[in-house]
Image (cartoon, rainbow, N blue to C red; front, side):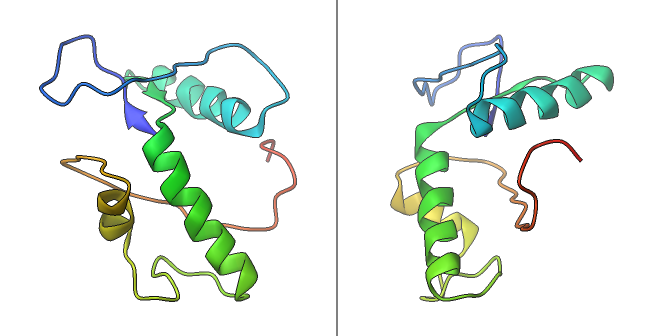
Length: 105
């Protein structure tokens, strides 16, 4: 996910901001996160295909090799995975978790 900004940025990226409820897990999670962020006066996040692909590849790696870590089986890091997808960033963070079948806690 990437921060949604009202101002133009030099790194313009095609963003797909989805705010409608749907059965799609990613959008449902995004909506839940944005509700919490809005409650605290923080800007909404939006889906970003480059970051989503980096996360998908990392999660497949962890599932295939039965481990959970911020470091990939090949030594990749969050920043290197983002760079591989050609995502330009100034700050990155990730959450790695398992065991939740739905977004609801």
